[in-house]
Image (cartoon, rainbow, N blue to C red; front, side, top):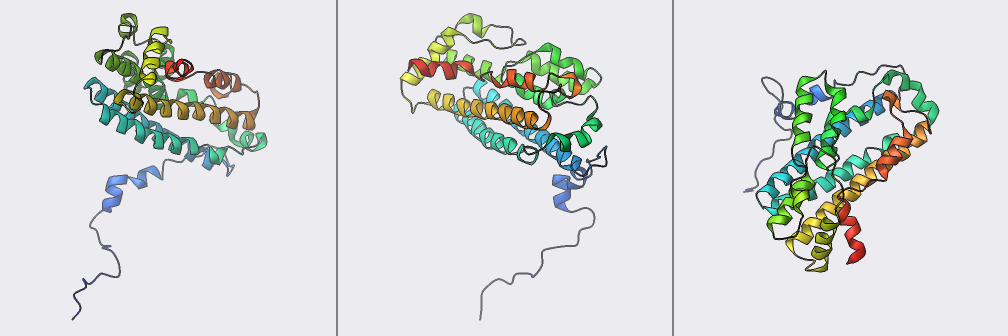
Length: 276
């Protein structure tokens, strides 16, 4: 007699209401959020890709907030795990440019007017992501004054320490010579590089490369590299689709993106390498 368990030919199909999958994922909501504003068939992929980017922004912000909280508690393994997850998520985010990377000017112009004054720099979740990287600017709250909940979340993020602020405070608690003016800086302002912080990272990288702090530094560097790649991929896709025209929403378009692409994330982690 066979003792093999009998496997049903089909999974359970009969549910009283919506499926457990729908209850968890809310797929019906997600797949009915696409309302194109032109007759061009290419607009759909632009809209969906942008929505997918917003979802990746959301999960990456979650990871970096998790890492920041862990560092406040001196829990480096949890922080590094969150940063490593965010690296894989950043890779997926960056791959989102693929569907848009081959846009010609004619293809983009066929639905560009539908965007009106809409522009990616108006993304509140992306702004929270940038704030966590230390790129703070109170003026970037202005576009969101008409959305009280979003504005309040951004204002809270503006006045909270960035991920890098938490890293430097952690290093100070570990005995590294992070200067007081950096530790006590106004965290609502953009982070500016410090020669003393550069010296701290130089010392870290000149020591035990397998140590906990060095591993944290490398996880942060992986994040910084992929953010830089994201900015450059954005620049290239925009340059290909619209050249040097002014961007939607009154932005400077390619010129603004070029300026962003030149900025280093966690700057001393890069410059310190010259002195190791």
